[in-house]
Length: 79
Image 1: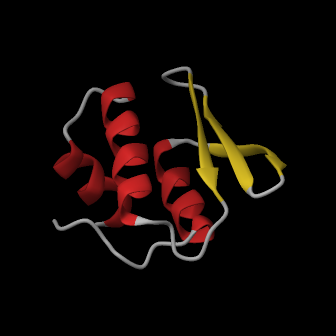
Image 2: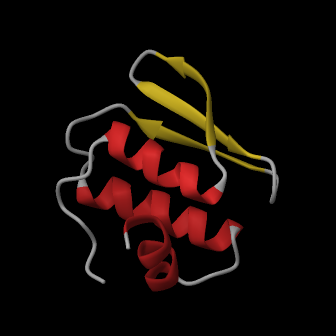
């Protein structure tokens, strides 16, 4: 699956909900999400759309935290 180009913060937060992430707080233009298993937190910029490089970095961090490759992660959250 190719990296989506038109993802905004709301749709990314909703997609991350499938992995167990929930919004903890928002400070300015950044949203903080936390997942209980595995214990992991990530910050997502509240932008429309999220830049491709930023999205790639977020997905890389998520894939490492959940011990899967980026392709598996993309299929799981956007599939």
